[in-house]
Length: 347
Ligand SMILES: NC(=O)c1ccc[n+]([C@@H]2O[C@H](COP(=O)([O-])OP(=O)(O)OC[C@H]3O[C@@H](n4cnc5c(N)ncnc54)[C@H](OP(=O)(O)O)[C@@H]3O)[C@@H](O)[C@H]2O)c1
Image (cartoon, rainbow, N blue to C red; front, side, top):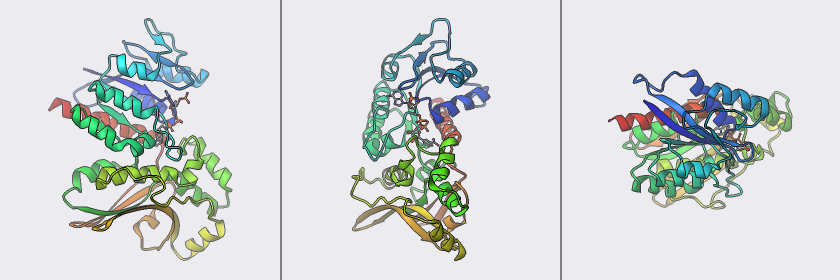
């Protein structure tokens, strides 16, 4: 009745995942429980316990010491690297929450973690945008060949079950184009600039809330949005992995309060837009700031709220939005993805 989970990455998302688990007695009505058996970080230790790691103790010890191995448990093991846990440990699901960097083409250690789990036929759930954006098809092919599921709803518009909905409900409607505001940090920063904050102040606030990437330049320069766009292009439009440099990526750095206020006075809004459009000639991708007219559905969104519009052949325009892109919501998406895996296994 337990699902044994290994968690590489105990940053904003990993920590929130544990907080969420701590509050839940069981995963679903069948009473199955998630047992965290392993947690690993890059520089702040690792901990393995076959009996399960008490979440309250782990969270409190990490809060006080910043280390995940500051918990003493009978029979626990410390210092095992994440990859060794994944290759050799006894667990059921890998929850991959380490970070990467699209701009620097860094997809490790996330990719190796996911590959090692799938090679052992252990299902994977992940929030790791850079690894999914750069290695989508390799992970997907491995998942198919090993007949082992992987889920990545914690990567894009995490405030709404966006990827899952589009993949399951819109396939027959034939998706032709996508446009989205995918960075809560950029939405938040743009709104804060109008209110009089400086870029640095707004970014600091976004970092404090855990919303911004650990290197917030990735958000303002458009790389975080580009990673999400690459995931959408591959997962929803079946496109090959787009080469970095083959599509424009522009951030929000050059925008001034005057430009943003002028847009607002006209009833519209400037937002960092991500676009995919498909035609018989091929697909086009772009990331850049745009002035949205007041009639555009995404100009109606406020604060960090993200949104996506999908143009389909059969249903015309479908619009989805979700409040924010917080680590708590990413953690919730991971939990939902675990639920999907368990539900499929029960069938
Ligand atoms: N924050 C959000 O709102 C959000 C939302 C959706 C998706 N995401 C994505 O989710 C992932 C995690 O985000 P986050 O905000 O939690 O990042 P974070 O706070 O920077 O945490 C990253 C974690 O990964 C660990 N790590 C890095 N390299 C490792 C390695 N080689 N072995 C083991 N652990 C390693 C880090 O270890 P140390 O602690 O030692 O540095 C840290 O614990 C990222 O890919 C991010 O893009 C984030």
